[in-house]
Length: 340
Ligand code: SF4
Image (cartoon, rainbow, N blue to C red):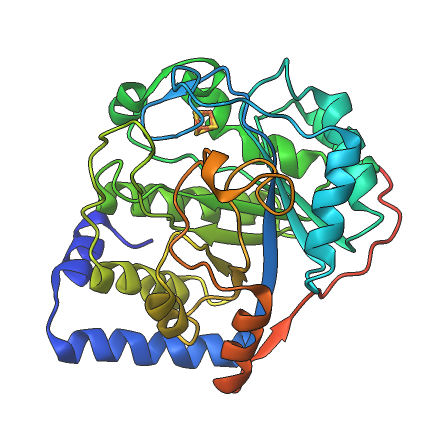
């Protein structure tokens, strides 16, 4: 397994030759295992209620924003709007409020989403295995859960209160998801929070451990960079573009078959460049606030973070085609999810 020192050396070597060599290796492996395809998805924020205080997030319980939760009619409106763009893979997100968005609410959202999308993933508060099993049976295919930082001290500094401040419970969440039979798990770190070499090394070790304990699951990784949030002056991410690209390339060379996601936190130019270097899945046409697609106007939105790439799904599809890539709307048609 790669060491922190080796990661450090690779990320700090900015010579054009080394960057090029790493990029070429990553490109070759990506084409070997994934061809020239990029899966597309759109995130849908169902609720911004949150009972945790994470200092870097616009939804944190102490931030004075308007709190909204979609009801079933509004879910239909938002989902229908997204489905009309051609998207078939939806990521449903909530803040971490066990009261505002209980299991029953999440199951209702999945049931509605099934009418519009063949593939449904969720990014929600951590649950127990039996609860994940309920979501699986309702129709959930994938769950995203980021540790954010694996450094326990740093974790406690930025996760001040609420359930998310429980480091160990969050760390054990991927295992509970796997035990529930969910077929896709997405792990990640928030770049800019902790020491990058430590967090990368820990994330890789976590993935290895999951792969060996649960080999049948489809894993993917994400490396969101910290972005400014409304009303907060949190530290800006110190990971520059070249280092960010090197993280993607390094990950690809270490894990040839793992999926790597790229969100609209990143600018169009960088996203377009990154697709050949290891990215397998990207969001398109994203709004990062509740009701952002159809229900709210731009002036009264409180996003979790600002979107840097505001291109529509059609524009992303055209960009991919112009680079001779196939945009993949879904590689999955739902079968009945039956508990193991
Ligand atoms: S990161 Fe999640 S748990 Fe933390 S404040 Fe934001 S929505 Fe809440």
